[in-house]
Length: 445
Ligand code: NDP
Image 1 (tube, protein in one colour):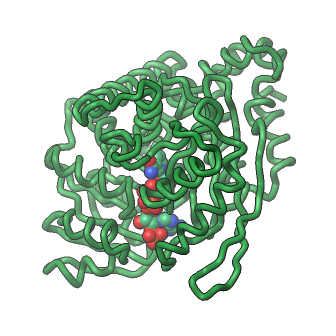
Image 2: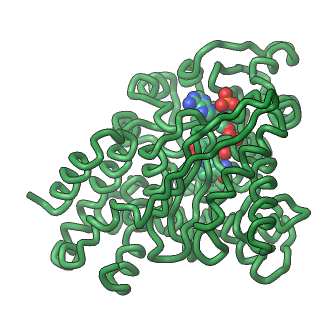
């Protein structure tokens, strides 16, 4: 049995109740076959793959908090510290009822390779809770965040583990979390990223994941003699990533015609009016359905997967994992979609992802495509260490450079191992090689 197959079999046996984690490991290890086979003796000797698929540490804790009626609730929370070979653990916190250990392990595992791809000194981690911020008052969210940090603070630090936002954790939550960390430890340090601009946040961090997604899409198309300009784009989600992907795509001349949330999606053939979306989602914390009530000509449709049946040139999944299954992938291709760039983490099932590759789409997987967010988080850490803040233009320029570099590394790694244009293989290999070398250099730990 090959080394990859042995480790895969063991991961499946040991983590049978964690399908998303098995899915992520399968995708990565399958695409590393060429590089692992070529260096099998070395990687086996140092048990690189066995160590790579096992988190260094998982912290699990309860979060008790009191709602506005005085009732006590208890949520379950985690921090998965996956791999610190190339830097302090770095990765977001997700607050969503679907959160469990397996989902955070898949996200933490992906984060290790993504962070390596940015070329910045950051290891991989992820955390969160099954708390649902939807429908909660600001005070309830604050009570939850304070209780969450009252346990988490002892496990994180500016040089050890630096969380950020993810689904359900935006500027408001990061503010409450930072305040509580400071209050308990007395330290004013860059222990979280995605902070507000008045207390150590970086300009362009809010925009970074969405902007980075469009920068790398543009780079991929440019190498084909094409561009984003004039393309009809379908976006899922209407949160942080979706909104700023839409903004940059529109700036570059694309026509974005959809946005969605977990209830349904809106179609606006005239092009999404982003000011309305921002007002609904960022100001009022409302539902995307309201868009159709406010914008003449727009329509609302119940259900999430229908958005992939809307004909387009470019699909940008920016909501959540496994939102595109094989059926949706087929619909996209049938309707003429030629490019897919993933804003969300693992939004395509393995079958959908393989289908895009088989059909020769311009397909940029999440690890490379959404790395702009964590890259600017690392730039926020640099600014915090320097006690300086850089201008929006400076951060944005660096982000552009980082995304172009990720494209180059991904594309070169794919070609080097005989899979030209396969950015899934390219991103995994490029991310893996640096982490593996660092793990070997640091001995068995
Ligand atoms: P937000 O919470 O800001 O927005 C999430 C959006 O996705 C909302 O519109 C939400 O709808 C929708 N959504 C969430 N869960 C589901 C679901 N189960 N089914 C359908 N729709 C869903 O999160 P972000 O924009 O920050 O994150 C979106 C994706 O991007 C995630 O996969 C995240 O891991 C990834 N990502 C985020 C980064 C960042 O910097 N924020 C960095 C890299 C990746 P509703 O309001 O109804 O829940």
